[in-house]
Length: 438
Image (tube, rainbow, N blue to C red; front, side):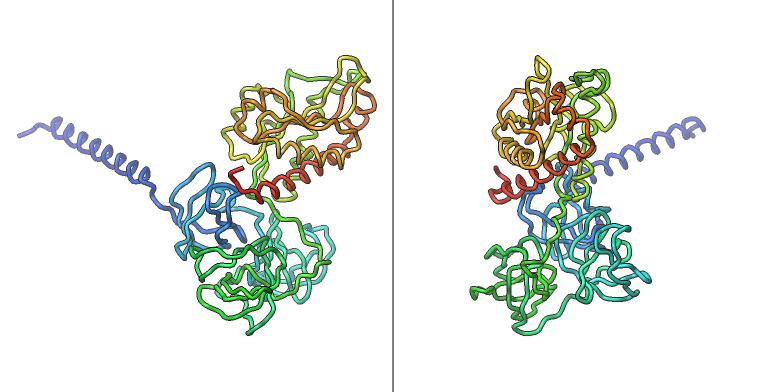
């Protein structure tokens, strides 16, 4: 008969072996790509063919939809929707995103006495008051506010006072006039996201309703007589006037990395009076640009957002390892002799960054008050050791008193934000039209 110590040792070894086997099994299970059921948290979210913001949109998912996550790559989730469509969505938007694309969804006001605002702000003018359980149409989301259409009025309400009604799609009559409500939409050959793509339609394009099919799909006819299929969230019955001010497209899928030049014990150049250092104004500039981009829904990252030194090598690594679609480094130039040079310049290093450099430089030339010296190639380390489309902006000569009068001004930093936003939008539009492979 075994003694007590031997029995205890056997029990202990059994427990240890069981734990090891269990952990190995769990690890193997998860490494095999264990699927996770997730609930969509944002009002609307584009599902793309590839884990890339420039990739083709194949469908949308909407708040409270259930999706299955099967993989993750470059901060994007691979998901499968309820109708078996497989595609990719940004991981920073799936659960708690607060901005999303154009759409057209039936929604219910879920709280009492909700004020419909003219802009997406509490301080904005109130258009009217909405009652609880009133039906409206949600058209897009920006920074926690949803733009809706209600009884002839467009306005904004907080996203927490709406309940999306997927089981109550909009109903249309035979031959009723419709219009594209999303930024763009492919006319499909059948009522399925996997069917062949037809014409590419744009926001506001006119259609005629033919018939309803299933799962929210409908058959429609274009102005030139071609028939095909669209989903109900892609169209609206309200005529979109050419005079109507179209709100800017929220850009939450696009990530921009901002780099304030210098910092910490590296002050950079300085003004002629020695009072202002380059590191101070590059940080203020980058923060102003971040604020501007975030107001349009961009996902913004920074190499540092305080007075901190980050090595040139680390800057390249931070950018290259991120999901950024573009990298922008902010600097202020300095000449060998004070007050001998003036103006702004944009630099890039790799051919893949040329389009970005030209787009941003064109906007800088149009918006900023200082003369523009153009754009060109330069072998800066933060550009050379960067795998992302990357530019470096010289936004004036800090040791030129005339330039410095702008450089040290808050309004100039805000203007830079406007110029960068405008340049990025032109870049994204041009790159999207040419395809993500460019």
